[in-house]
Image (cartoon, rainbow, N blue to C red; front, side, top):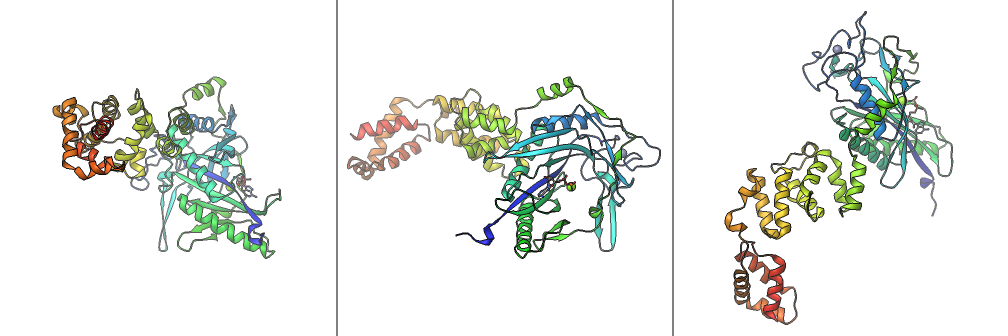
Length: 475
Ligand code: ADP
Ligand code: MG
Ligand code: ZN
């Protein structure tokens, strides 16, 4: 049944700022380190004193090109910096150096799991502004962030839901982290999203009037803000009231979007070419060299894990999310018959010890990959049973000691055929009821007998062989 409420659809485009993790700022040699005493990472250049001359950090250009290549963009061999003029206390020189008419990268895309491609209109380079901290009637200003390099990634209006927006940002985060060019922490502000959102009647092709919600500082807030704003616009349109083009902020405590005041309402920036920074010129050769230096990206790893290594989609997503986890997995499973096994050990017992995302991002469990690999190979050869391998891994995780030290000599000795026979016979003797049940056709009763064998052999019995032998003895 059609209903008015279903007649509108959401269209959104995202503008995402990512702080680049260069050591030094974009136009001077001040540190970009996060935190630090306020106003200690500053100099006349990033403070915009008269007479200073900015000098473009070449790493910033390389990082921006890498971001473009990894998101299928065309890299422009000519691009240039412009001045965007505005007067606000976060920017002591009263203009921001950014790119306007000639961005460094254009026309890329990021693909979502549902197959849809979110087109990237452009990626440009710019400098960050300082940070304002309100305390009662006082405003404190920290200029440490002034001149920290940013890239801004602007999509086409291709995003159709808050979930798509979330997935797009997550994909972007993964990619930039793999490249090692940004840590993309929304909470710390090293990744910030502005959401442009409009509604239109389904079936219509023209875009509706949009609003822009500034500075989302977490994915969950972004989703909430988009849901709220879509509902707000829809109820206006249903009443025949036009949506006003305005800049909004998301108020976390009320869960509502509200009009923003201040610099964001300025719309005449009087852009002009930045006279102090020469145009950015790249050669085909430089771009191709950077292309060759790209690491295998999370999407490619995901495809390889699912299509060639037999890993489930959900597991492949977890394993490919962070480069350090992916590299650990690849090293631990090298030469193993079953990569899936390696995945299970990592996502099971090892992830259980490394619960937070931050720890997974810099994945370094107490058991190095080559030690896990040693254990996996012993397990595959049948030298240690699954139960034993579990115990040994826990010991390795507890102590951080190598596999060879965590396996006692007794444990490594293969269980002799005689000992296995003896253990199976004893299990049948000690659990006559289970033996009877099994003979009567309750195949599940074998589990109890197998458990007894495992206990009496301290897990050294190979499960498959023990099961076969028990069945034979019970015939
Ligand atoms: P501005 O100059 O205000 O930044 P742009 O045209 O550069 O505006 O667009 C900024 C972002 O807004 C882009 O991501 C774009 O896809 C998105 N956008 C533009 N128009 C709409 C619209 N009507 N509805 C939703 N998103 C839009
Ligand atoms: Mg904008
Ligand atoms: Zn400086």
